[in-house]
Amino acid sequence: MSVAHFIDGAADVLILCDHASNAVPDGVDLGIEPGLLDKHIAVDIGAAAVSEALAGQLGAPAILATVSRLVIDLNREPDSAGLIPHVSDGHAIHGNGGVDRGGRIARFHAPYHRAIADAIRTRRPKLLISVHSFTPRLEQHDGPERPWEIGILYNRDTRAARVGIGLLETAGVVTGDNQPYSGRLLNATMNRHAEANGIPYLGIEIRNDLIGDAAGVAHWAQLLASIVKDVRNRLARTGPPAT
Picture (cartoon, rainbow, N blue to C red):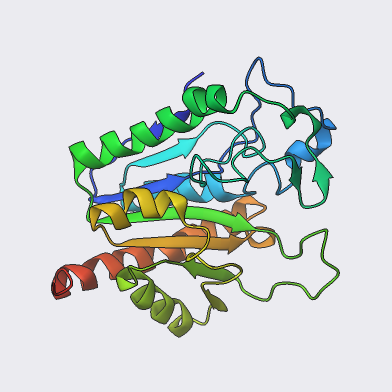
């Protein structure tokens, strides 16, 4: 199977969705109940639909992963302890014990990131968009629900994030600034393909109860399309950061 689904487009923005699928490829046995594949631990619920709708609104290319994050987490560095999870939000992933780590990296992780690198090299995007979703409450934590509708994640390069956060707040969106978790800790795909190449980016996290149906997907994709266009245009006017 191909590790990435590519959507073509002419815009100078590239959309990425690392956790778009809950598919478990042939030859992989996770040793879990099938129902767990519909949970947030296996797939970013709604993220693929938003990515596809956003690509359509912007006329932009997009790369969507085609393998579950329980098989391998494509938004982790190859040496990360969480690359092939043994436990996720309290659920044991029995089939990942003693797995051939190098084999999974070679089969899924490496070609996925090669596909992104190839797209960047040939298309030279001016802005990268990473689309994820988060659950309102983790099962293993008996705490309050996460209040943010959208979070913007970033590491060192804050150019697009600062503009995007301001625009979302102005639009009345409850926006997390490096919430529900910090892009300074979990930002592997954007570190590798955006920050390492000097490309500004928006790391977008949408609360998954907001994009669980077609109406929610349409609403947030339309809003985000406007935000992305505005961010892209403002960055184009200000130019690259001073060195």
